[in-house]
Image (cartoon, rainbow, N blue to C red; front, side, top):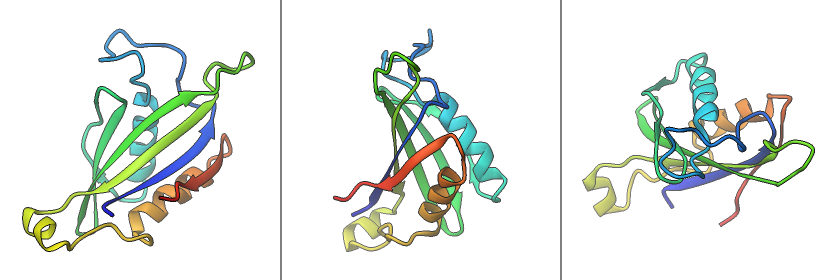
Length: 136
């Protein structure tokens, strides 16, 4: 296992307005990536500029001796009351060297400090609810 998934629900981030710069109409997550980048910076976590993928957004970060990709995308609940209400997924992938991949070392741990930090940041935000890990 080299990735952990965190899911949560919120209407805080855009899930209804497709940007002109979106690669695909489902490329939501730009505002989540920017918000999370600011929150992580306040925790002294280094990050690069988030960028778009064909499924959502990716935020490269460094924490301690580890390098990670935070991959995020969302799906609307199709609520008539709030079109931005939906479920979000952040996949935290730990980057590993070729040697680590060959030897099976350096995998992300269930108690990884960055994972716990992201969970805490999400859980402390009043507009975010039902923060949980996906059980694989």
